[in-house]
Length: 176
Image (tube, rainbow, N blue to C red; front, side):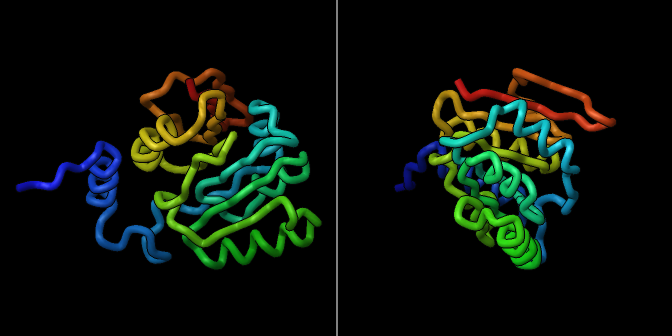
C-alpha cells in the first residue's frame, strides 16, 4: 500500500531530486552571489510600491541590501541566504543603517522558507531555481502579493511589468 502524497509533497520531492544530495548546504549554492546595484534595488521597490505595511522576503539575500532598502521605506523585511558569511554581512549592514528592528536575516535554504506572511518576494536567482520556486509562490502567497525578479523571469508567468535598466531586466508579477 503506497502513501498518498499531496501535490506539494510531490513537488518538494521533485525539487530535492533536481537539486542533488548537497542541496541546502553552504557548499551547494542554488545560485551564485551577484549584487543588485542600488539604483536597481530602488527601482524594484518603486515598481512594487513597497512601503509601511509590507512584509518583504528576499530569497537569496546576499548582503541584505534589498531588505535594508525596504526597511528604510518602513517595510518589515526578512532576508534568507544559505551562506553564513552573507548573513553576517547583512546583519552588520542593517545595524549600520539603523534598521535592525525592521530588517531581519536568517541562514536558511530558500526552499525551506515559509512565504505566507510576505506581501512582496524578491529574487535574483537563476532560471531553473525560479522555475522550481514558481509553484510555491503561486500557492503560498496571498492574492495581491508582488513578486520581483532581477535578471530572470518566472517563465510560467506573464509579468505585469518588464523593464530594461542599464542592461538589466526587472520583472514584476502580482499574484492572482
